Image (cartoon, rainbow, N blue to C red; front, side):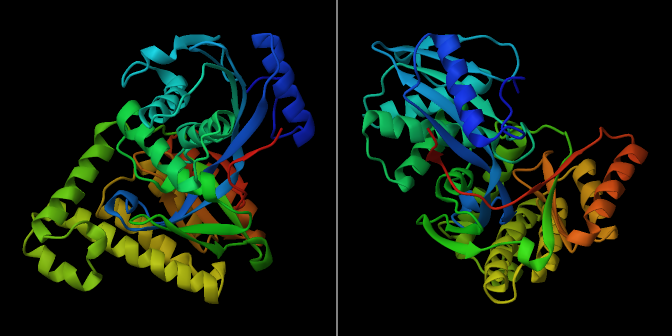
Length: 395
């Protein structure tokens, strides 16, 4: 984060003005506007999205912001306030899968995907700023993509609905970036609402907004960034997806979403042991999502702790996507007052969440820090998040 622009501490109006001013200094012109899109925390429903199942994420109060201006040619110039990489210059005509590196593959992937859809994407100058932690499983990459597609949708007059932008950013992730992700992250970022979680049916993109406010229940949602960086483009994520597809094929269903918990007994006799455990996670996780939605609508967030705990155990034991740091974060949180905790995101690192009574927040924070120090792990970053609004133009 640049010293001149820190949206965590600066008033929003000043932060937007500073980003626009830096855009002018760097590119010599005036930005057409500033768009932002949030990262997300997945409350529950992990690795169910690409199995056409159910997920329950919420947009968070940490965002990626892009200041953008249209150019008269096919040149794209990209700059981030993070680090000292300098301006990256490329041509729209040169975009193809594998042609971009680092953070630039996310905005460039969106441009490529829109062009694949026949949208006349112009050259642009783009300045990115983000306070979504990188590699923490809070979907920093999708926040960038959703901010960029929101800007380009408006600047090109494409008129895409949220559902169309979800699919375009998924194409960018799958085919340009090379990460076989589903539609959950961008759905939360594009369709989130303050004070709500996004109950998404990944088969048909139907969304219902479920009230999820921790403050009236005297709770806080802690995010524990373990500092173990992960990447969806690595083999672990892809192998889990392949196992799910194999399980669906052997069991004769279109997707694992079509199985119920009662079907698992029969599945155990048809699948090898590893594939069965992968399938069991997805089937039981879908059921946990539905239970969580019902509890939030009825009893409120204080009732969902056991489901968060069960979700983590399933990811640790059946899907095997946790790591020692995530397990320790969950264990230390639960032992010191959190009512429920789980890893969140694609796994193999990233963050855990801990739903915690306000009065126990500092105790949980201190306990996790001490546990990490005692284990010789890198000190975690711990912060609170609240359900926030989705992508929008802010200037």
